[in-house]
Length: 428
Image (cartoon, rainbow, N blue to C red; front, side):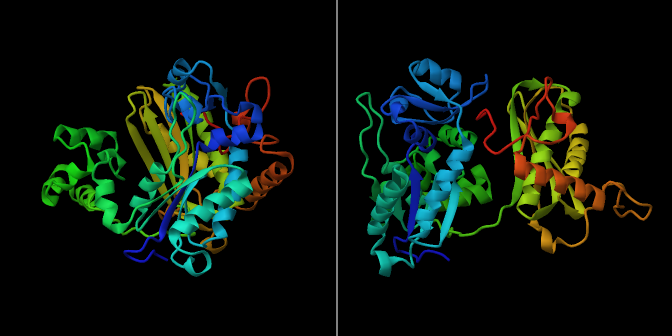
């Protein structure tokens, strides 16, 4: 379902300082204090911070060390992903009261297509105000809402609707900002070019070298010149966005493209022997999540980010369905063995893609050992025994918790499993 062209049918709802706000909600003694949610390791970054912390210059994605220097009085909390997920589910329940067409972007933000909701709830601006009021009523938290005829405009509008940090405390924002079609270019063109999707740090620096710092300056460039500068796909996309042309629909119920986990290490890893246990740990959790979701995949991917922040990926696809943690770990380890990790690995990720429902995948998981005919031949560890072992592990974890049982490889010295869970990170 898509919003009607020319009508203000797209809402972007964004929670205000979501993680920090949930912490304050659960501990009222934190109210009016600078609160920072994030990691504590040497490479940790800020995941969220209250407006009191933002008033000192702290922002999301800032290194935690710098955040502490800017705001030494801050209350720094490690974050509780399970709790944030619980509140996020309540938030999406509120959205469903107004429209079934919801495209989640993260735990705390989503696009809503309200083109079919006007008879029940009125015009889009009224729906936006009702959503804000309902979020406040149900969650006791604040959100900001942008309204426009496209996802680009609605997202930028929600940013304008937010409160502003100040030394005297947060200054309330409008809460809801509506950008009419005839106002789009006046709203869009003065904005920094980095506000457009597709303009990251490198593209932003490249455009700046050509004297382009605002969306309006980008729009003034000839489309063909922009395509020569940035490539046909990106150049054409940015030219359209700079003129407010964004045809992407709000997509409800989109299927996941992959299931994966990443780990940012406190210090660089230079040896394969150090990385293999991390591969097993990540693969264990990836396989568990696949089975819990009733999914299987056909491609294993390994991602490595080095000390200089260069990033590479390696992948291998199978002809049969893949859902075993052991097989994911084995294949990921083989992919890793072909990479020179001497320069130092900062981040490691393992994921499975080319997903489909397990019930419709057909066949059983195949090993990577080729038969004489060139086809993947089943290993004795695949099949019923492996399936039974991993089903038993899943059942034990469901009853006693994720840390009750797992691969021996990931047992820490002194006991205890290092199980990788959603939200288990240094916010690196």
